[in-house]
Image (cartoon, rainbow, N blue to C red; front, top):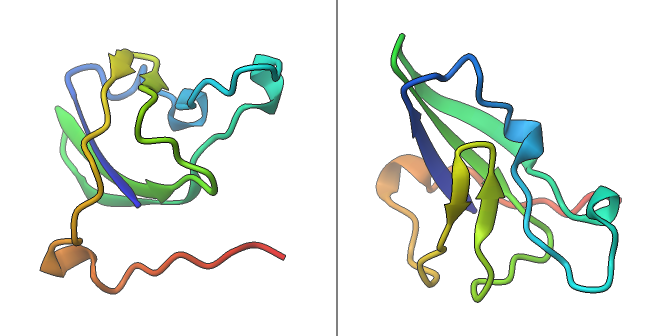
Length: 89
């Protein structure tokens, strides 16, 4: 699970444009957020939680606001414990 806080121009931020490069595949085949949820929202900020099926912690997360390095895996905080990954299919 990835938790992402967007501050500022939240209306111009498209979560469907968040991705991660997959070497050897065209950008149209790169992953996009799965099972995304808005955790918190105000006029100036929005906090999302979402999954990638095959997340590579060594690669940056590419967003409309720029590239973001990913921290290593951690245990989810208590407020995210009820969100469980379910594989499609």
